[in-house]
Image (cartoon, rainbow, N blue to C red; front, side):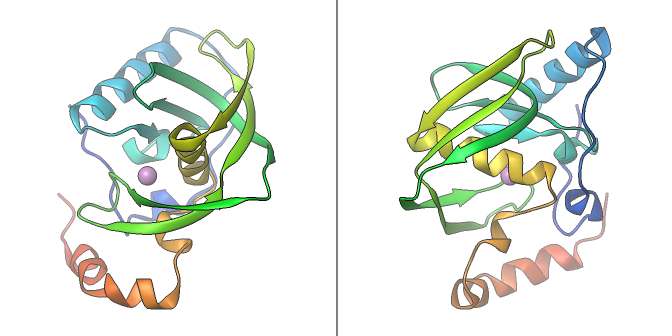
Length: 164
Ligand code: CO
């Protein structure tokens, strides 16, 4: 089974490319991503995290699996919430992240059909976190200098780790 790409791998900083072909390869890829997400107890996974720079995410907030291709945030609420977030690509790090509490997102399902979600709470959180991955953004980009200093040693350790 695939390993997760972890910080500071430059793959996590790339802008992912849109998906244009909805075929068996895509479905196999989605299955792999689901397996990795559930294996590692994640609530979401973006393709760059398994080394593929494509605009594909899978997520499950506890209410069922969502395959989401070429997702985009159409609108977000003005109110913001702070929630603690972790990321499979940043092992052992949890940081408070401020984000809009509600989002409307649009994209395609595994068959290429347009789908739209209005999300609040944890689901809104996961959509934003995973769509960030497709734009090369990580949770550590959302935090204050003080919060960053608190996790500095953990980041240093990840930076030192020799890729396997
Ligand atoms: Co993540």
